[in-house]
Length: 148
Image 1: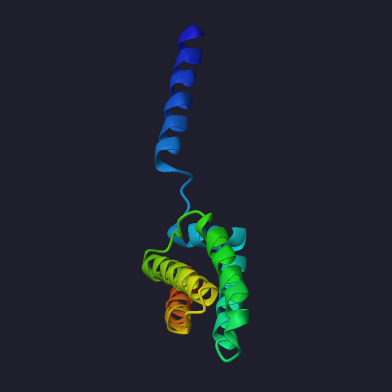
Image 2: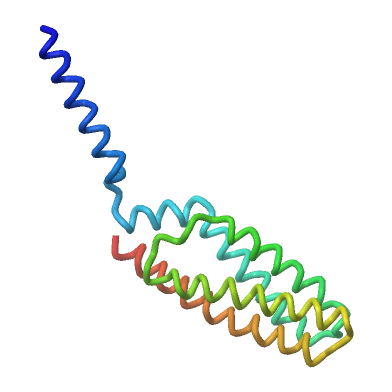
């Protein structure tokens, strides 16, 4: 009887170890779906909304630019706290969007604070480039989710 118990224990331990080493067997599409539903979608929407606001305020007086660019920087910080996006197709665009938003937002804030319109405008143009990168990331995400 002891031999059966030991064999059962060894077999159970081996299976548990194998599962830990290989994961739970989820597919990349399932991992992406989890990322999307666990904050990815809301972060994408927030980034899209705030970057769109930065684009819109570029037509207004420079004294309102800084606040809007700071809001974008806050959303970038939240997005950076997410786990790595599990889509190889979208990861590069996502990373580029966050980097571009962050750099552009910082230039916008610094330029507006120093009343340096060319610098602030350059930051806004960079944010506008980030909007395209974000759109590409979302397109890839949707494609990967649709392939499930």
